[in-house]
Image (tube, rainbow, N blue to C red; front, side):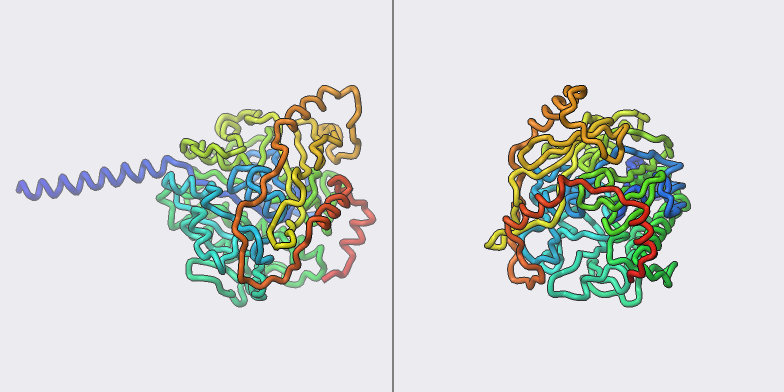
Length: 498
């Protein structure tokens, strides 16, 4: 009898410990970070777009927090590295776009030198998963790149690999890398594979705190038809179809969160890595807006940024946020003490938890665009010691040139499309002085990537040398992307451009 009592007591202890452990696990919030590729606010109807309907994103916005002043970087890889590391490009070295697998030379993301937000959460007991576009390592020579970056599970399009033509595909017949290796999925649509992976990962880890990073391949070119709209023909029609399919996928993920009950303990962030391709024109609040990708104008970097909290707080905010802030915000929400002294970002958790109208910032910053360049030895280098950049507060924005001098100043509150340069206006001289004090505190020299040169891979991209890099920067007209006209818009939508 005593033996039976002992066994019963042991079983009871195991059950209680198990319940307590499960309860402790479930107190930590889950995180899903969704980043659409190449899409500005002029393609989100919740932000005033009129040439598209995004009903699932609109429903998300009505149950979440809508940020008006959130900065990405102007191009793909600078945004991705800033997000992952919580560091600005002038500190992490990625001040240009480095298309790592395509080039087969120069830079790769070194997770040992740059601890990622995924690794920090993984160390805190989170299950971590990632699906979609990576582009900052070459999986042929670094098959452990995702594991080193802190991801337990992954389903990735590496980016086009030089000398490997099938790897160019991210949409139809996609070339995808998982723990089983890389292969082509004939007849499949890549975004479906990635989104199904995300949902499956959440289901498998529903009893653990989890973090999902979903850098979507949509809506980046090449422009293609989708499973829902197989008959679209022109570039513009395909772009619209891809935006609608993006909305569909987001709806599918949100529906799973609701039906599984996970939404009650999950933060969902939806944003984009930069503005739309300049070849695409949208319309927002009655204004024709050309895509601002690679430019530092608001249509290139002021990203749509929506957050759904576990308690579904709903309001609109002008709080200042940029991509360096994601890392420290997730740590604070997860109750993890930040031991990474290299973070440039500031947590905005109080906006999400306390309805604060302000973040912990008095300005946000964006920089980094155009392809990177190599010297005659084939090393990736920064063409200029100090890259051009912008800083803004809730009202004003300044442009800083490569000599570290402010040369443009805009009142975004009254001039959201940056048409009236106020630089030199004595009436706002104090505003200029305040920004100058911020600029003076920035390092005089940007970091270069501290990575080992890739060897032994074919490349289909010829090195571009420093003189050409500088010339291209000079030709950017001070980073200003003009608005589009109705005539240009009508020409685009009528063009039979397959």
